[in-house]
Picture 1 (cartoon, helix red, strand yellow):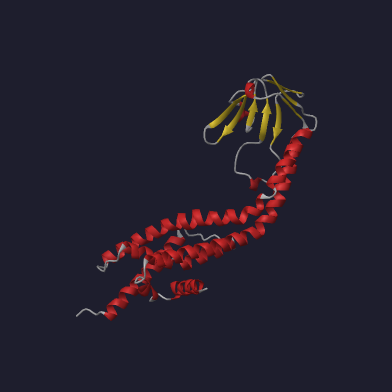
Picture 2 (cartoon, helix red, strand yellow):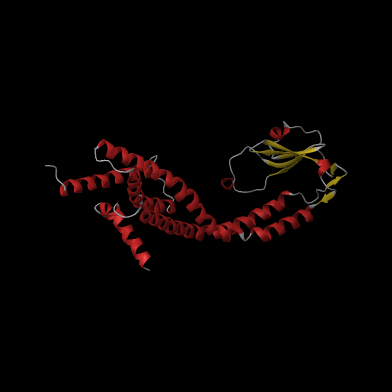
Length: 287
């Protein structure tokens, strides 16, 4: 309970009292580290809870819709047979299976319109010609890959099997029974994502740059401040911009100023540092 009171005391002072920073720099560096970690945990928890309240129900509905749409793309009378490294279908070639009817804003931008094309005379170029993710020719399954460009799976390595509508639906239903629980892990995923990539990633880089700006400012002002102390000031002045960023993000409001977060933090940090110097000059006037 005392630690919580201490945190909110530091939180309030970091936002409202530039004079507090002089007192702050007389404490150990671990004091600031603990504050930043606790602040990161609280803000990440708020973000994950608020986002999940809307995301969990919509994700569950979305998974159900996607699974049903995937079922629809497999034709009722299509039968695929693979035996001894050769395949056959009971349809004329080239036979195209399109992508499921999923809203465009849920998919990444792409010119791909079809999920697979069965065409024994097909070539690598036909992946683009048919605007398909994959193509099955006489001997291989060709599939697009964003890293290597294309992957090749020889049909001779496939076991013997038959596929029809009922078997496809059975597989999709089984997958859905597991996937339907994924939305309940969203709060944890969002929370860890905020901690690892935002607060321990992007924001730490900001802190290092802000520390450099303050260090150079103190050097120019001929009142040198250590780089570590400069970073500490940057961490605490980041409190207010972080609050604004979380509120704006949850309200889905975009600030039309590039790098506004960094700029605001730098301005606040320079303001605090100037206040510290003026206080020192008042207490220790030059004779």
